[in-house]
Each structure stands twice: as C-alpha cells, then as structure tokens.
View 1: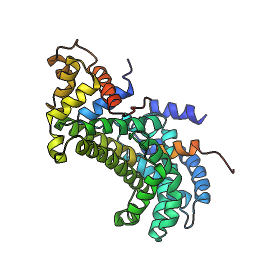
View 2: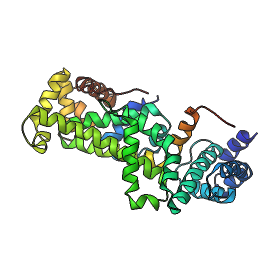
View 3: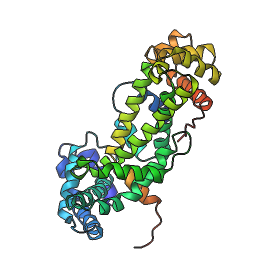
View 4: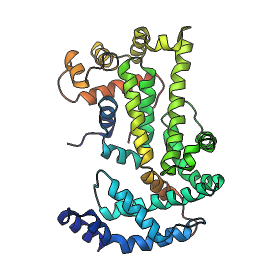
Length: 85
Length: 249
C-alpha cells in the first residue's frame, strides 16, 4: 500500500534520516513544497523540543530539495509559455 | 527506441555506470550543443556540459528511474549552473540574477503559499538577491542555483518563525523564550483546536516528550495502526485553528 505523501512528510519531520525519494518528489511538486512550509509553520507555533526538532528536520529537507534544484527548474520551464523556438 | 534501450540497460547492465552513461553521450552532446548555443557568453562547450553532467550523475547516491531521463534533466541543471558560474566569475551579478529570476520566482511562489498571511514572492526574490549580492560564497558556489534556492528557503522559514514570535508576544507579556517553553501555551493551542483527550495526549507526548509517534499512540490508548495518519489529522485541526492552510498534493 502506498503511504500518502503527507504522512511521509510527517515521518521525515519526526524521525532521523533523509528520504531521497521524498526529496525528489518535493522538488518536482509545487504542492508539496508549500506543504512542507505549512508543516514548518504548524510546528513553529507548538512549544516543546520535539516541535523544534521537527522544524530543524523539515528545514534540512528543504535544504536538500534546494540543493537538487534541477527538477524545480525543469518544472518551472514546463510552466512557462513557449514564446520562441 | 532510446527508452527501450534505457530500460534494457537498467535491467541488464548494472556494474558499470560509465558504460551505461556513454550510451547516451551522443544524444546528450546534441542537446548540450543546443543549450550551449542558447547560453550567454562566455558559453560552456557541449563537451564541458556533458562532462559536468557525468560528474553529477556519478556522484548521485541513488539512480531511480530512467537513466536517460536523469541525464537529460541533470544536463539542463549543469547548463544553468555552468552559465551562472561563468557570469559570477566575470563579476556579472546582474546577468546571473536575470538568469535566476524565473526559477527563483517559481520557488518563492510555491514556498510562500505555505506561510500563513500574505507573503509576496516578488519581495522574497528581491530580498534574496540583496542577500546574495552581499554573500561572497555565492560567487564561488559550485551549485549557485542550489545556493540561491536556499537563500529563498531561509527567508521563508524566517518569516514562518517570526510569525510565531509575534503571536507569542501578543498572547502574553513575557519573553518569547519563556513562552515558547510554556506548557500553558500548548494547552491553549490544544483547546482552541478542539482536540479530544486522546488527541491532546498524543500530540503532547510527541512535541513535548519527544516520544516516537507509534509509542505516543500506544501510551495514549489509541487503537493500534496508522500512527502517522492519526497525527496528520491532529495537526490538520491544529493548523486550521491557527489559520494555517496545509496544502494537499
């Protein structure tokens, strides 16, 4: 059974270890990029060390996505209208 | 034809990545020549672009999916990064920013959607350019594209955290750090979210006690199974009560 991405994101926020597949999925999805930030915003409002750790892990996840910026660039190119050949 | 050949190679030739890569070199070289022609002066050669692509592909920890697709995608990234590095080496920051602008705008727009309240992506991009202009590391970065993307990410995360401080100071006239560690504040959030006792227990044990999600579920007497699904729903309620929209893919 496929685990929904929002649950994979939560796991990434609350457990150590970087999920390469998730990094790639986020890099290629505008929705997921917003969802990671939304989750950071939720944890940022919650007190507690567990919430702080989750923020740090999610930020590291976004760093990995930024480092693998190529899929974001390709996705952006696909969204732009073709004006010349 | 290429796709079939790629699938065959992925299935049957696993011991020599370079050998598999070489199969695509003619196609990559042709695409690299197009990218080189479209690049600003000083242009990287097609051979330089293919070589840079090989180094990126060889350094990858995992190669899932079509090697051909991965190589072509990374070639695009290498073309961007090589062009950026040359512009930066020539001291042409404005040229580099013009090249980065559409990609950073897309990234900023996507990330800004996750932050509650209005966050103008154009403003984020302008702020990032100002920071990059003052960052000596940017001009020497191996991956200037990734460096610039991280600059936007840092601004968005700072904004999300700044919002927390604003709320805390508005809630109580206490130093932000003191309020941050306050169980009282957590109780207020849980009440506002309308969580059941079991849901409160689970969230508190995850964020305050740092208990594993499945252990927190068990400790709080929830039915076993799908702990992350349960926590996801709890966080949905908290997010809604805080006015945060968690977008769903």
